[in-house]
Length: 400
Image (cartoon, rainbow, N blue to C red; front, side, top):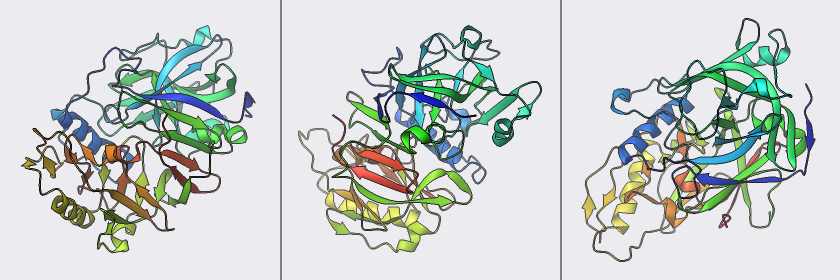
């Protein structure tokens, strides 16, 4: 099945925090820190799918693994006539899906639930097609999909295709996606998600002829600001530095990078490169804080703490153990933290990405040897995923 495209070979969409003032959702209340960090652990388990078994007590939290840290949403439209849907952006998923009528189980969402029977361009994927067998879905009369997330929530329904409108000038047809008629406690408010992973069903793969398997995003420094998701070549490439994109045979959809070191206040920490390389490091849009190998985290915590000794410490909170009490301080000075990659590339973490709720925004509770660079540390950079050339770029101060 070949898609046709109309529009330009670069499309930029407004990206906002689902909890900020720019969010289209009525419910803007930020989850508690406990909810965010419990969710973050579930997200880690989801990313490491078959490897990880959830060690978190799921009964403590009534929020989905895809809910609190998956904080960034875009607006796209499905169908003919087109119907706007607010969806989450996710580099950790391949298959895109939205809630569809007739719903067996649907959660409340902001816009009306998509009704494929009202779209003149919608069709289901037949059971016996190569597209369905690629999906490894089940079959009765039409191709079915099922996606389980790390916390017992899931989405299932029919795999079909329709027209996807990214902007008034940018249309993709046919776009393959899941029409979810059974969606158990997956999101609140969002219609579904757009998958930006490396698998064949992702938006990146489906639009590779148009956008050449390149996309980028900029996550704003605060939830009050806006960022963007861009499909196609980044604009000003002059200040972008690239590091190699690695692949794991166990996890071919995720984006791995060769993290080899960390510095604090310009001083290289003494951590053997093998500590990072043993399990590899995933760059992820949906994990909140960065998860490091325990020995690397302990070295970072110690160095960071010595620079912050002038501030009174605060009790650990839900897995963040390097916390401070800044009450009474008008300004605080935080040492620079930089992540170093194998090919000489350094990412100076923006000042908004070093502390999270007055705690160091890193954790040593890494799972199964795999590290994950979370979205807090990616703030304000244009992060470029050049899948075709197997490289990931970083350009500073990119969100306007």
